[in-house]
Image 1 (cartoon, rainbow, N blue to C red):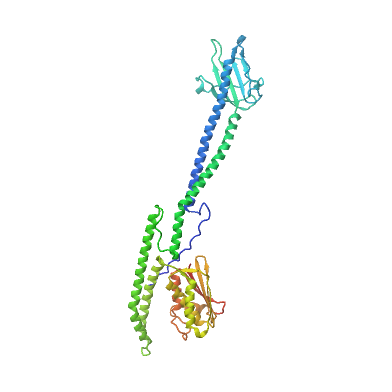
Image 2: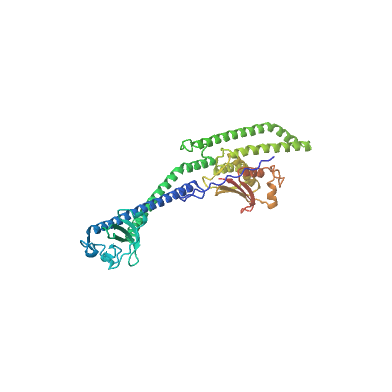
Length: 466
C-alpha cells in the first residue's frame, strides 16, 4: 500500500496593507462594529443635544414674549366707553418693524390695540388649547400672521370686571426666530461631533491594531517554525493567547517525538533488512542462479515493503515541525565538488547559477538525495556541459538541472520516471534515481518534470517549497 502524498503547504497570504484589514479579518470586524456603534452613539447624541437646544431657544423666545405680555397688562388703562389704552408706548424693537413677525395685540370685545409692526391689521389669535385654559399664566400656541408668515404665540387671558368681557393679550415671534438659532447651533454641533467621532475612531483603530499585534507576531513566529528558523513558540506572550501558545508548543513537541520514533523505526527496519537483501542480491547476481523467479518475487516484495515504510516515515517527517531551511547553494556546491572528482576524466564544465540565501524547506538528506540523483544523471549523459540554476517563484523554488547530452523525447521522458526503467542498459545504474527524486519531491508537495534544455540535451525541473 502506498500512502498518498500530503498536500503542499499553502503559500503564506500577504499581510493586509489596508488599515481596515481584508474581508473576514478580525480587525475589519472590530473596526466595523466600533464604527457602527460610534455612529449610532453620535447620532443619538446629536438628536438629544438638538432637542435640548430647541427647548432652550424656545424657552428664551417664550420668556421674551411673556415679558411683553406682562408689561402690556401692567400698562393697560381703562378708557371711556370701554376703550383700551396703554400708559406708555410699547412699540420698542423688534415690535416696531413692519411685517417682522414680532407683534402684540390687546383685545376686549370689539376694541383692539396693536403694535406698529401690524400696520393697522388685526392679529388672528387662535383659540387657547384646552389643556392650557385653566392655567393662570400665558398659554402657548402656533398661528399665522397677517401676511401668511408662521408665528409662535403666547396668549394671556385677563378676566374682566363685573359685566365686562375678558381681555385677550397676545404676543408673537416669527418661527424663524426659533429655527434660525437652532440650525446655526446644530451646524456647529455636527462639526464638533464629526471631529470627536474621527478622533474616537482613530483611537479605536490604534487600539485594535495594538491589540491584534500579538496575533500577527504569532503568525510570523509560526512561519519561522515552518521555515526552520524556530523550533518552538516563545512562551512570553500576552495572557490571553498564552494558553494557545502552550498547546501549540505541546503539539510541536509531540510531533517531534513522533518524528524521532518514525525515524528510529525506519533505521531499525533498514538494519534488519540489510543482510537478507544483500544475500538475495548476491544470489540473483550469481551467473549460476538462473534468476530464480521465487527469489525475484521475494526481493520485489521486500522492496515494496521497504518503500511503504519509508513513505510512512517521510510523511511523518513532512507533517512534523522538523522541516528545516536548507541553503541550496551550499548543497549544490558540495555535490559539484564530489561529482567533478568522480567524472574528472571527462573534464565537465559545471555551471551553477543560484542566488545567495535561497533556501528550500525540506530535510537536508532528502535534498542531497534528490539533487545528487539529478546532477549525477546529468553528468553521466552530458557531452561536456552541465548547468544548475534556481530561482524563487512565489512560495516555491524551481531548480533546473540541464545538460548538453542526447536528451529524451516525450515517451522516453515518461518511461524513465518509472521505477527500475532504464533506456540504455550499457550505462551503469539501476533506474531508481529519477523515480526516487520524483517521489521525494511529491512528498514535500513539489514536482519533477522533464523537458528539452537550451543546451541541447535534457532539462529536469525540480520544484520544492521555499
